[in-house]
Length: 338
Image (cartoon, rainbow, N blue to C red; front, side, top):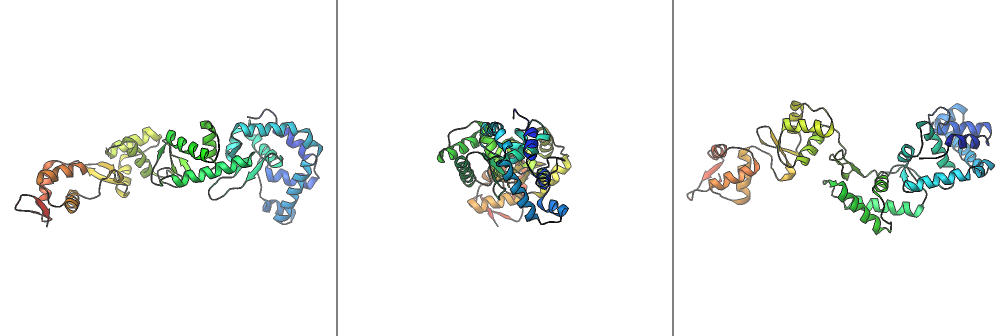
């Protein structure tokens, strides 16, 4: 957090400018009303093009950097640089504005000082990264490469516990020559990436994965079952969604969502498992057919044992399904597909 008033410095800087330049910068950075305006919107007020407003903005920033006021406040800008170093020397713009200013009212003023100060480099938003600032070009480039390598090394369908994920990121940084950093700094650097993110249970994965980018009850149900590690009744799933995520989940609605999603397999009366655990969809007859297709004719006891790995059913249920026309009992007593 800063130990000086950004507003005081902003006021001195703007006092160095002609009226129109001062007005443009006030509007561009929201230094008066708190609302930052676009080049186009300001241009419409003046009846000139957005490009002309951009030129006025750039010229005004240049005048400030060459002014006596800039020299006067050099120490404060150095302190802002030190504050940036304290939070890792690289951070997403939204993270900086949530961390350094003492109050919400100071946020636009801090952004203005970052823009004016020669210590600070802005990297605009990209497909893979949020808008961010840094005070060390070499470090920023190394972290960016490490984040790309980290993403490429991840299985898009897997989630990684935080401790393990931080170790992976630390290794990727070491490969780029970046020394080990604390967990807060690592999370801040991870926050610059649009490609990796953490779900509500603290597990990391691809940001666009439904296991990370939680959108609906199905996604919460998936995380609930994955966390539990074994089949659950849909009422238990609903209860645990509320406990884990503090999100209301009605049992009937949860049941309907589980039925619709191919990630879940009904394995008993109201019991659901994850397909990724090896369970196959279908009724008991389908399960028997898949077993016999894979392994050939089997004795009744073997079939019962195998089916009960897939479904929570009684022995009698398996036996009844074997009596149907889909299966044939051979002379050796084993059952095969008809």
